Image 1 (cartoon, helix red, strand yellow):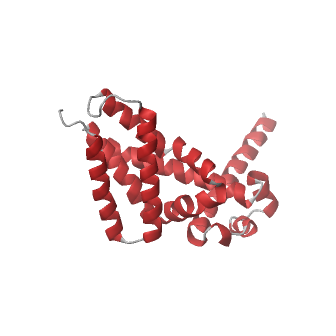
Image 2: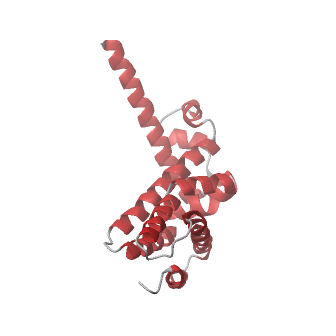
Image 3: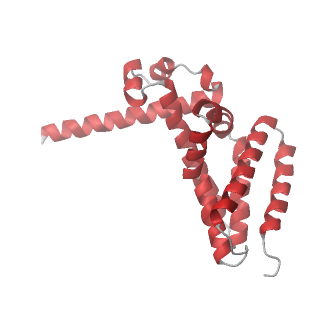
Length: 202
């Protein structure tokens, strides 16, 4: 029994160390950018050795990859929560898309996901992480609208990829432009784009 407790305590300590490294890494990557972060300093800030940090993440790139995945998951949850506040399926799509674009004002999303991640991880891996989070919600929303007859019957995959690509390009642009007017203009353009895919006979 004592051995089981010891194993359980070590597992909890490892999990707590990992969470602390992720939280500190997220803060630093958001503030300083990928190239401004030193893994040993992240470890020191949370009171663990550099070796412990390497044990959990193998490298600074490994920590960054884990942070990007975490921020992407949070972004997907934010998009889903905004959509769920609306009862009408069409308004759910609009709200989720707007939430995705507006998230660029979050320093963590802007610097980590939109600015550094495509360069550090590469486009393919960045897209894969996006597809596991907010892009999945977009695919589900479009499928529901097709089922409801609000969008003409068609394969969901190409439509989702076209809209996701447009959203990602807009989000990348917003992350670099950094002006409130840019967001307003993009949301207006988004509404026009979405209106173009909605059936007018329903």
